[in-house]
Image 1 (tube, rainbow, N blue to C red):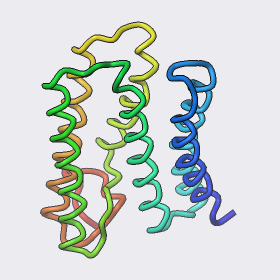
Image 2 (cartoon, rainbow, N blue to C red; image 1 turned 90 degrees about the vertical axis):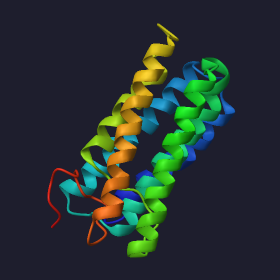
Image 3 (spheres, helix red, strand yellow; image 1 turned 120 degrees about the vertical axis):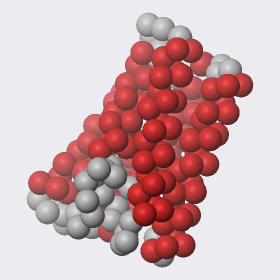
Image 4 (cartoon, rainbow, N blue to C red; image 1 turned 180 degrees about the vertical axis):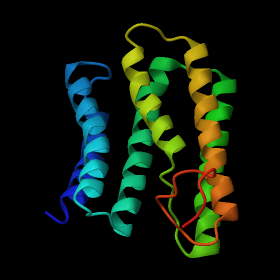
Length: 178
């Protein structure tokens, strides 16, 4: 039971990889995608509910999210055919997130990402995006998503730059450190 949340997170990594081998936006894709989304919420819920949180679990969850996101970019890129402006925004967001993780490593010895409320909100919004492709492929929707993700990444960078100690579960720059 103690490792169940970490096991669920590891399954999400395998499922994310499996998405690379099914037709995009088809039935199998949608089922695997929804299982990834469910596991994203279930692992954290179980860890918090049964007090099974761990540093390993926080890191594994962050990497599973990152891998899932990277796989989705690979799959959705040809479908969305993003403009150069969108690509530059995505690259900027990735650089900001990697800088935040690198700064955390330099300052606290931990190369990882922070689980802020804003990051969780961004993740939820991004999880919904592929499902919206059935109805619209509007660049406006993608621009809004990039804006939300950029603000979330900026918050994480500020936390990495200003925190006195590493806390993967820091809720917000608006909430004081423990």
